[in-house]
Length: 221
Figure 1 (cartoon, helix red, strand yellow):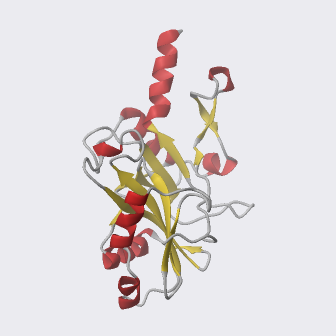
Figure 2 (tube, one colour; figure 1 turned 30 degrees about the vertical axis):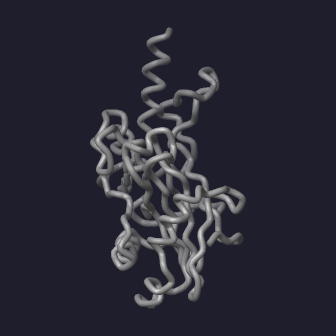
């Protein structure tokens, strides 16, 4: 069942600004996209694998489960909705006495994005990356606890370190925990949940493809 009105997931800003000289295909390394990224660059951040799928919201209102995509008007493929119906039942939420909440994750696998079959060659699934309860974002251990209760996967933890160490890890490449091909990148957030002066979460991302674009551009010069 799909339902409108579920809180849409916020945009995650790439850590560096993009270079207008290359039509924004490459990054301006060292030029942070937000001042809080630069201010916190030497603090400890948590790194999770970025999954290349389609954004899915799973809403539990205390009685019913409903699904939505990245926006309230995004269409979710029927084969993915069928899988979500299989994974998420009202009985499972009720059995663990979970309060009203919204699960945020990726629908991923075959026929979802160009390399979806590298994750699951013959099917699709859902992988959890965030949970919001009454406007509060849950800490990683609580996200994993609810994932275990609902018997669903959560995005793999890749490690911790400074923001610059996370960027270098993607630049140098690391092994995906979910597929044999290289991962899409990292999502990075401070170890302690923070917001900026606008009330926006401090969270960022970096993709391996950002650096591949850089190499290709340099080769063409």
